[in-house]
Length: 162
Image 1 (spheres, rainbow, N blue to C red):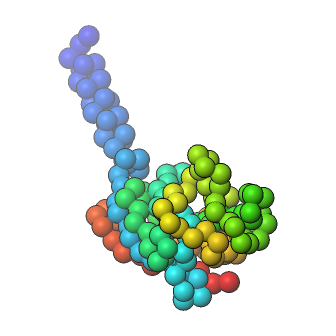
Image 2 (image 1 turned 180 degrees about the vertical axis):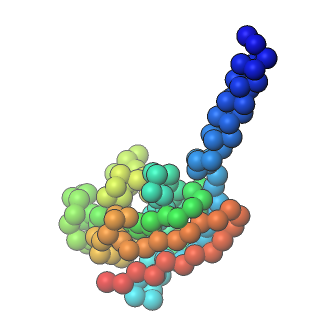
């Protein structure tokens, strides 16, 4: 290989490596904390998910006081979806209104959101008081919720309306 060809090859490889660094960093994550409310009252259960246009996601459970702590939020502009499990009655009939005796899914079976995201249930959680939210919040395309995640730790409250 001649010197000129060798130099051209080195420059081409260098440019290739430089271009690889120009896309989104799929591993870049941030911490976002906040409270989810519906009509000014804390949402007592569910999952918050951040999704970028290129499909990167992060999610966090909502505690009984409406707080979430997302440690894997993707950096960049995100659409936000909030999901709450469908209430179950007595022996676990999905989609039915919550009634007396509701205790969540059968032992050993995880509770899942409508999107299939597993939801953690705190010991002693009262699932009979799950607040139902409008379906539009269960999809990024219809929620109307957005945020720009930057590196580091941030606070972002999410306000929903019925």
